[in-house]
Length: 210
Image (tube, rainbow, N blue to C red; front, side, top):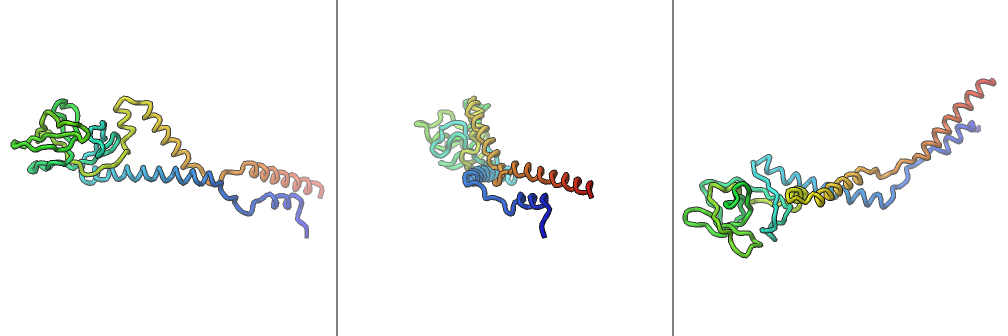
C-alpha cells in the first residue's frame, strides 16, 4: 500500500521531536531569571515589614555611614518607643537638626542627660555638632537591604544618566528572561503550509477528473 504523494511529503516534513535549545540561550535565560528573582525577593523583603509592621523604609543617600551603610541601600526603621531612649551604637532616623526639611541616618554617639542624642556618621571623623531632640526621632534601624534602592538614590542625587542606564539594564534583563528556550522555526511552518496547500490542490484536481 502506497500513500498519496501529497500525504507522503507532508509526513516527511512533520517533525517528530523538538530540537534542543542552544546552550547560550539556556545560560542567558538562567542568569537573567536568577538576577530578576533575587531583585524581586529583595523588594518583597524590603516591603513586608513596612506593610505588616508599620515600619519605615528609607534609601541611604550619602556615604557618611560607610561601611555599615552604602548609598542605595534600603534601611527599615522601627518606630521609636517614646518611653525608651535609643542606646549608644544604634542607628537612628531623625530630622536633621541643621536642616529640618531633611532626614538624617546616623549612629547614636552619646546620650546627653536631658535625653538629647549626639549622632555621628561612621565615616565622619567628628560627631555631629547639633544634638537631636527625642521628638525628632523617626525610627531605629532594624534591617538593611543592600543596593536595591540605587536607582532612586542616583535620581535624587541628580544623576539621571546612571539611573537611566540602570533602568535600561533592567529592561534588557526582562527581555532576556522572556525569551523562549526553543526558537520558532518559521521556515518549517512555511514549508508545512505550502505542502498542505499543494496537497489540497492535488485532491481538487483528482476529484475533477474522476
